[in-house]
Length: 238
Image (cartoon, one colour):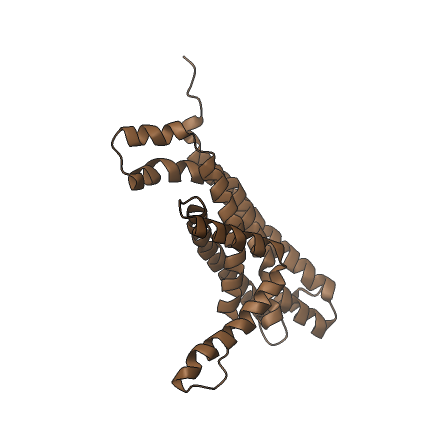
């Protein structure tokens, strides 16, 4: 294998691969952060007393989990352009408005991530023993204080494992944004393979990079679980 092909410069493809990796990391991280926040809000909305809101969010989750991720990305990328143009048309602006592919991809992956995260959070909140909530209210805590001190810490612990799996899934979905013109890691490897005819070598390099990312996520998850469940570890026996 000619390792010089992976170096930056005029004859290597290191610059393109690094740029693709950087876009993948930014896209994945932004989608996870936004999607997790939206998922938490959606879960709280589903568990609220407002039936219209609860049913609407439940229907949204079913729809988002039922359609292919690529279709969501394409619909948002092209649909947002037409929506913005329709909103601006009454103001006399008829020119074509192109949506940023990065933010369209981020929004699409965030909404997909939120649909699954919402179910994770909803199940975690429903698994909280009612006695803990009733005890907090009996001590005079407000509902917000009960949420902050009892519901959220317990729900987060219960949902951590599933959220870590969703994190990996969202990162694995990032190559789909190549359909709207973004140069992610997989597409950069494909372009390098097309120009050098060494597809296998560049895709193997992408495989190693994705495995390294997954390993780092796994280490982070294990350390987070160790810290969160430290209070459950038994002390030394007398």
